[in-house]
Amino acid sequence: MSPSSPRSPQIPVVVLAGFLGSGKTTLLNHLLRHRAGNRIGVVVNDFGAIEIDAMTVSGQVGSTVSLGGGCLCCAVDASELDTYLETLTRPAARLDVIVIEASGLAEPQELVRMILASDNPHIVYGGLVEVVDAAEFEATRQRHPEIDRHLAVADLVVLNKTDRAGDAECARIRQAVTDSGSTAAVVPATYGRIDPELLLDAALRPDGDEKARQLTFEDLYLEERAEEDGHGDHLHTAYESVDFASDAPMDPRRLMGFLDSRPEGLYRIKGYVGFGAGDPDNAYGVHAVGRFLRFTPRPWTRGEPKRTHLVLIGSGIDAPALRKELESCRTTEEPGGPGTGPGAPGVGTPGPETPQDAAHERAMWGVLRYVQQPGDDAA
Ligand SMILES: Nc1nc2c(ncn2[C@@H]2O[C@H](COP(=O)(O)OP(=O)(O)OP(=O)(O)O)[C@@H](O)[C@H]2O)c(=O)[nH]1
Image (cartoon, rainbow, N blue to C red; front, side, top):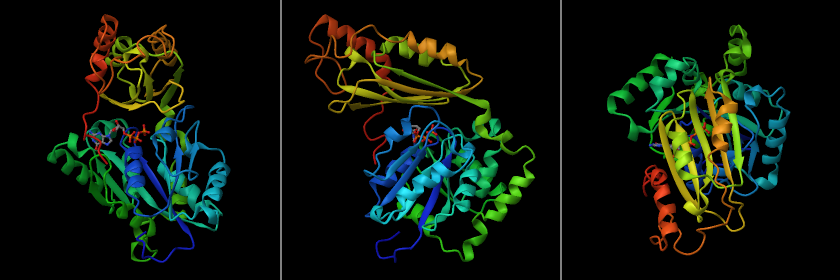
């Protein structure tokens, strides 16, 4: 909403969807950083018991809520969502828009349906934004042709990660969007850096000429009837997740061995890693999408437990075996143990001072190869 627009009595609720790792959280964080005075409420729907996305979304205090522990589209009833929407729509929150970040495995139509069916008088459905990973699109579409259906119902398609895809690839995706019957605007982006107005405009699109692009409850009802096996073809039915948490630091070499040999079906890994003496000062955000891997270090905050939290999502994966492998990547080192003194290796810290520090630093080399370069993910 532009600051001059009259305040709507109903708060638009935008659904932000997109396949695993397409860049939804990145886009959301961009939006929150460039909200130009708008107050944005966020509902994060994560897949897996550890609420990694809730940790990575830098929301405004008191206006971010998280629906952890599963896929919202399969919630038996929508009451949990309704409770959150009730909290976010109370007058004191003074929100201009609410964004629901769907889990990467959610069926966006289901979320839209829930919003349309909500009897909260303070909200209005604000549109569906579908984020697409330009680099992984073809591979994703082969595995999940239902992506076309998501594109078909989107109001805005964000063609993200254009830095990793060529012009020809991007043109093919645009064609796929058109072929899906979608008339949605397609906006290319890197790191989700779209003009926030685009999303807020989508939220505020009046129910007039554009009506044809908006899903109506009836459309959804008819579509549901048409789907013979209801929830059966949801993206995540074939997916499993593994939650891993450890207070003991991870051994950098062993963890890299694990990541380098991760099985094909393990499509997504996200979370934070503590490397103990390897880098006592920083938590390493980890993101793997397909074969792509990246670490993003950030300093531990004061009093924050130096825990490793990971969520692994894949299909055809052997969850107990993966957990066991991760367990064997832990060090026996005490948290806050050796190497925590000055001179311990880390990002942007001085070089090693003792042979032990040097050994820790060498152990981190494999990790540092995947550390994001400054500017890669700038706002
Ligand atoms: N190269 C490149 N990487 C990007 C871009 N946008 C996001 N990423 C990276 O892609 C990874 C996944 O991004 P997220 O924003 O966490 O994706 P997501 O859709 O929220 O992921 P899920 O929660 O698993 O569904 C992160 O490492 C991001 O830094 C981009 O435009 N280019």
